[in-house]
Length: 319
Ligand code: MLT
Image (cartoon, rainbow, N blue to C red; front, side, top):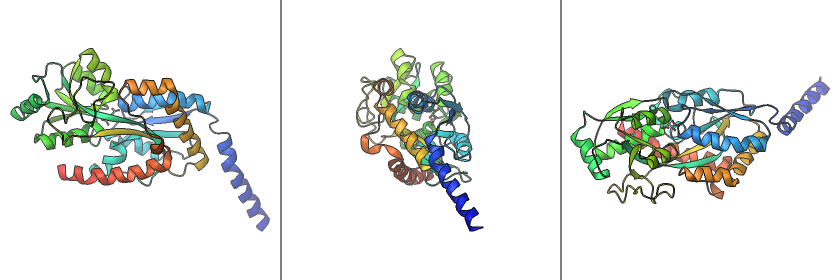
């Protein structure tokens, strides 16, 4: 009997390193919990492209939208922890969600193996081209004077575009009609067509339309202007210094994914972030690359704990 247990133990022990040594032996699914074409999808596809080269297998992006991103993250969190399903989470799914979903089926601080930070994404206050305001102060004045006329797009309760506009709206003192979408990719289409009035969204989704003059950018909520949008004033310059927020997008694997596999994924992400063309694509869209100390799963895990602690009181106060 003892020999059998020993034999089984040695086979099991062998499985770990062997599994990791052959990983990945087939394509890997990266769940993006919002519609295609939005900021999380954009960041995911840019880093996944280079990660696929490093790993020698295709990382296939699967868009699973709903409930501010928590539908896709729940599905990914509950998938097999064999390294063949990973996910692109963000400040909403792994920061705001616990405060906004009483029955959230995952704990951002416990139910994942953090892989690494992909990109910081400063938030902009943007509006339809015909919005009757020439600057942020005029925009805020119009919002306050027309509370029943304006509508604001977002990507579901707890999405970055929801939580950051909850903050903006509460600081301004307004409660607009909120219009939910499966992602800020589709929401942006309606902003361009004038179906919705304004949005708080991540820069990587907006640079192209702002440069094309299809929408208006009133301010960027970061301490400094973005090199990608040098003409867009900061909220501080525009008269609203209290509104400063940058979102982030990061890769996670399900809890229990073998450590060697998580390390292989983290290393592939680092290589993508060090690849000049990949960096250039993220930077030209206004992405902020993680510094050396902000890389890897350990840093991300500690950061998520701080983010949940930071956003929970803010969002509960605004309920
Ligand atoms: C998206 O990719 O659509 C956004 O990240 C959604 C959001 O969080 O606003």
